[in-house]
Length: 88
Image 1: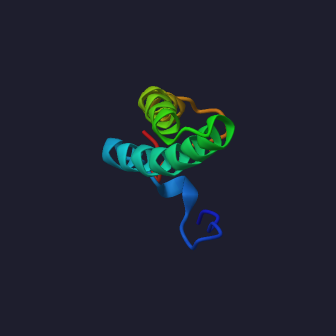
Image 2: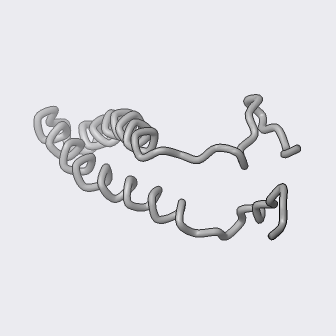
């Protein structure tokens, strides 16, 4: 049996789908866009410019985050080795 995580699931048994990675990317970018836009508004005092900065930041980082997530799924570093139930 694997270790049960804080939220009640076994993190080593989850294979993340492309769809899940996309949804995670989108939800994070919405949150981050609001933060970036608020900071830009605070600095510039111009709401239109702040929104443009937030949207540009989002369009670039959305694809960068997705690529980063998918790359790390191919890297075995830190993942426990899978044990098979049988041997040939």
